[in-house]
Amino acid sequence: MASEFIFDREQERQRIGQFLSSRQPFLLYGPAGVGKTLLLRTVLSRFRSVLYCEDSSTTNVVFRSLALSLWRLENARACKMFRDEGAIASKSAVSLKGIVMDALRGGEYSIMLDHLKRPSYAFASAVREIMGWGSTPVSAVARSAHMEDTGFLQPLYGDRSQKCEIHNFDEAAAGQFAREIIQRRGLSAENVAEFLEKVLKFSAGNPGAMVALIDMARSSKYRSQERIKITPLYIDFRMSGGVGTKGIAS
Image (cartoon, rainbow, N blue to C red):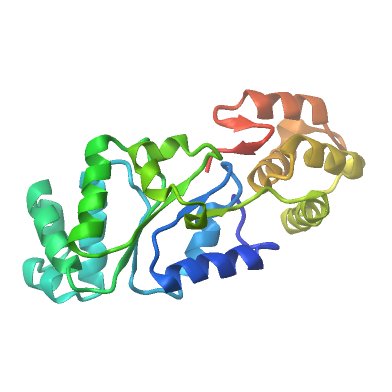
C-alpha cells in the first residue's frame, strides 16, 4: 500500500501471524496496490526468525538475501563463513547456496519470498530443496488472484488452507480510508467532495490506487484555481505505466 499506515487490517494481520506462528508455508496474495508488503512487514517485526527476501527475482538474489539475514541473526554457520557483509557479496552463487543450506539445517527459521517474477522450474526446485533439506517452510507473496507471478512455485501452495487473501476495501472502509488520506495529505479544493466520489469509483476500493489519485490531485498540473481537474487526472492515471482502475503496481 502506498501509504505510511495500516488501516482496517486487524483480521488479516492476525491471520498472517497465525501462519507464521505455526511455521506452515503459505501464499499471501491480493491485487497490486492492496498493501501486502506493508502489511506483511508490520507482522514480521514480531518474528525474528522469519528470513524476509524483499527481492525474489532469482535464486542468486534469494540466497544472498538469506545469507545476509542469517549473518545478521548471528547464525553460527553464517558467522563462521562470513566476516562481514562484504564477504557475502564476494561469494559465488554455488558457495552461498551450500552455506545457506547448511545454516538452515536444524534451525527454526522460516522464509518469506516477496516480489516474485514468474520463477522458473529451477527456482522452484531450489525452494523444494530448502524445504526438504532444512525442513524450512517457504512462503510467498503473489500480486494476482490467479497467481501467475508465482510461476512454478504455484503447485507448492495448492491447498486452499495455505492461502491468505488480502482484499480491496469494501465501500465503507474505502470511504474512510480515502478521507483519512485526504486529511493527511492536506488536500483541499472547492470540488473535493466530488473528487472523493470519483476516487472511490476509479479505485474500486484499492488503497494504493486511492493514494495515487489523491497524490496526483495535489499537483499543480491537475489544479485550476481552487478546483481539481478530475477528468485529465483520471485519463493520466489510466495511461500511466502499471496503473489501472483496480490498483497500482506494488
